[in-house]
Length: 429
Image (cartoon, rainbow, N blue to C red; front, side):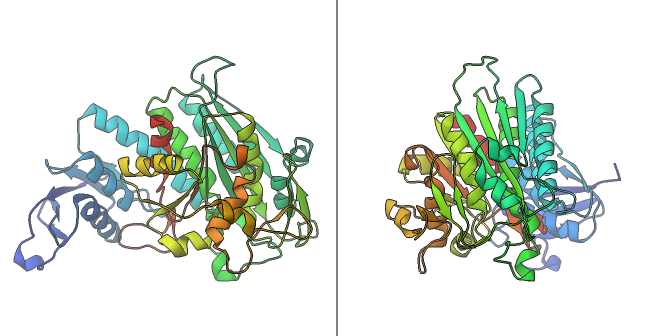
């Protein structure tokens, strides 16, 4: 490790020569982060200071002094992370419980951020599926098994959504099915099914995106990454419940074999869908995962996806959005987010939203009617593929999972914001 700068966290203002509202001051041996009314909470101050130290090119930091808590240490890591540099951080604590938890978070978040930031050339649907399976199996080799269904095999098993979205690419679409079963009993009930959208690149298809909107679409597999990372963290924390994970992985590209507007997809559960916008593809692949999850009769189903721009318009990039027909189900996810110091906000989902995705040629279409709320109608679409049209199911639209440009809290790229919520949901419910 390079010689590390020692960084203290103190609840006092900086000396006047550093400025009236200074966040950072420096000594001969290192730096101090000043937590005051002007600089915000300890966690916010730590994360902002970490971004500034990263911006100075500081390669290694050791957290020093008694001012740190587990959450402020974690906030510093979140801000110090840089996808262009392998910075080194010494947590600065000998507390074995804290170190175990911090290292578990770091391992899960590092995987989520790295795989999401990977180039679309490097991270194909199969690479995403293989990486997720390998990471989980290393964590719990005796408890994790998996299978991959790819290419035309998807059709033979009834997964028409993933196949149709992915057939425009020369790289075949894949569904990854992971079974985490720490009980060792084949007949153990499934507690929770997790479903993630794994669109490794989204051109929009024939409803092609403009270039500036397409530039960040390597991140459209953020939902698959997030549910995988959430399960990984829960496993590292000692999760004893059986969980099944479904990653719905494809590239949405244009070719002579790509799906088109006006096509109709018939799903395994009998629902037919008219394609009115090929850029509303995430819900088409998630539908297959939700059908498979429902067949397992779990206590809970939770899906996560970078699904709509409408959710980001509603809550910005600081909060993830939560949807459910059931108050209790939604509240469980919101409570998990609050317990883990992550931000989540419930957006509307009502039964009447099911009526706002009509089609003249199929049961439903894949986009809402003009004037309908895009995030809510997307969630309503998904509900058509969940047992009893949404029973014990929560959808997370990951509005806060990716930062298109660096800001005062986050580096550019994936944030990992949401994986702790999912881990806590698995643990507590």
